[in-house]
Length: 73
Image 1 (cartoon, rainbow, N blue to C red):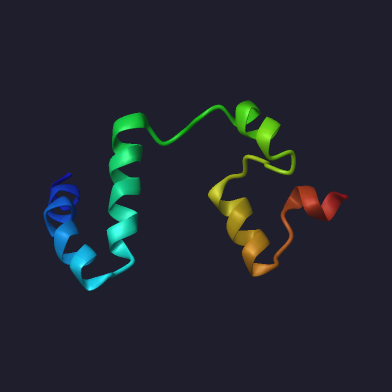
Image 2 (cartoon, helix red, strand yellow):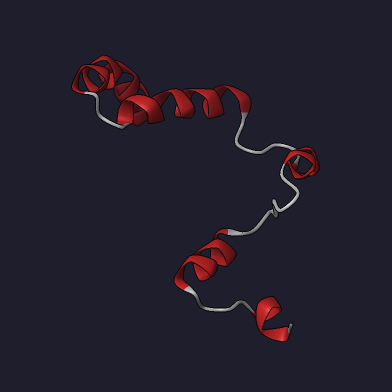
């Protein structure tokens, strides 16, 4: 995890330069403290269209290649 600590040290520089990393580093800190997964059912209550997908499914939806499940419907 040395990269994480280097990013924390560099955060004041990124803030000074108004670089987008200045907003990403606090997100990394949050996820590092609280974990990377939550309860999808709780999020689905707030966002009814929310659907937990794998990285492969997400990339296929972005690229436009249908998954096996989408092709079957």
